[in-house]
Length: 490
Image (tube, rainbow, N blue to C red):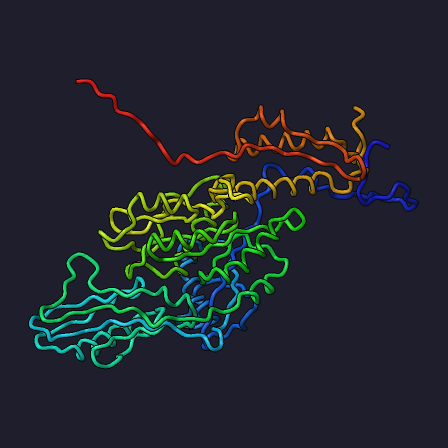
C-alpha cells in the first residue's frame, strides 16, 4: 500500500466512503510564535485582584480596577498599552511587604515672594504648577502646590504639606524601588523661580523592603511569556526572575522569554550595578536620575512594549531610534554624554537618548551577557535584536516545522527509497535546508554556503528512534554604525 492514512484502518468491512484530513502540508512559510507579555508589579489595597495570581489585562482601564489607582502595576500597564495595544498582556500583582518602608521625598520652600510668577514642580515625569502672588509665604506656596498635585492621576507618590515649608512626596508603595522617584523644580526653558523664594530638594528618607518575587515565579507555572517587565531593580529579586527564565531557556523546557527592567542613577552607579549582571535573558535600561523622566518601572514597561511589538513583525530588526510614548529625557546639560552611554552599553546596560524635542528614544537594546563562564568577553548574545530574539524565533520555527511535517512518522536509515510516513536523516536535512531559505528571505540569517556545509543530520547511534542535528545558521546583524572619511580636495 503506497498511501499511509492517519486514522483510516487498513481493513474496513462496512461499505461507505471514508475521508480524513491531513494538515501536514497545509502550513506554508514560517510559523510565527504567539507572543504573550507578563508584567509584574505591586498593587494597592484598593485593587480588586488577588495578590500572586496571573490575570489577563485587556486594557489600562481594567488595570485601574484590578490593581488600584496610582499603583505601580497600573502605571506599568498604562505605559505598556501606550506603545503596544495588540499583544495579549498578563499581570501578576504583588502586595507591599509587611514591614516595608515607603520612601519620603521633600521639596523645602523658603522665603517670601517679592514678585508674582509660577513654580513648576516635577514628580517623576509629572508636572504640576503653583501660581505665586507677591508676598506669598513659603507655607502658602506649599498649600498651593498640594492643591495642584491633587489633580495629578496615576502618580507614584502622594504630595502633602509636611509643615514648616516642607512639601512632602510619600511613595505610594513600600520598597527599595520607591527611592527611584525623583523630584524637580523649574526644569524646562522659560520656567523660573519668582523673586524672593527658593526651593531645595533634600535627600529622601529611604524606602526599604521589596516584595518577594518568588510568588511571581510560582504563579508563572509552565506558561510561556515571551516578554516580561518587572517593577523592581533589586538584584536579589531580579535574580529570582532571571533564574527561572534561564531555566526556561534550556532545551528541555523551550519556553524562553526576555525580562526588562530599568534603573535611573548616575553613570558611575549604573556601571556598578551592571557588574553584578551577566545573562542573555535580561535587558536593563539605564538612564539619568531626573524628575522630568518617568519612573523606572514605567520605562521598563515601555521599552518592553517597543521590543515586543517590533519582534512580532521582525525579530531581527533593532529598535534604535524608536520613541517612547509620552516620555521625556532629562533637561539639557544633565543628560548622559555619548561617551557615557557608550561605556554603559559596553557594560551590558541598555541606553536611551533625547531627541531634538526632548523626547526619549531607544538608543540600543542589549542584554547583560558580556562575559562567559570564565570571565572572558563573550558578545554572542549581546544585542537583544537581532541575536537573542532571532534565535528564539528560529528555535520555534524548527520545533514547529518538525512537529507539523513529521507527526506520526517512522524512522529509517537513508536508503534512497521514498516511502509514506517514513523519515530518514536526508529527508529531515532537506526540510532544514528548506527552512533555512525561509529564514534567509525573511532577513533573519545570511551565508547559505556556510549553512549547507556545516549542517549535520544523523541517526543516533544508541537510540534508533532519535535523530540528532547540528543546525548552524549565521544570524544576520544590525546596521548601527557607519564610519566614513571625507578626503577633500581644494
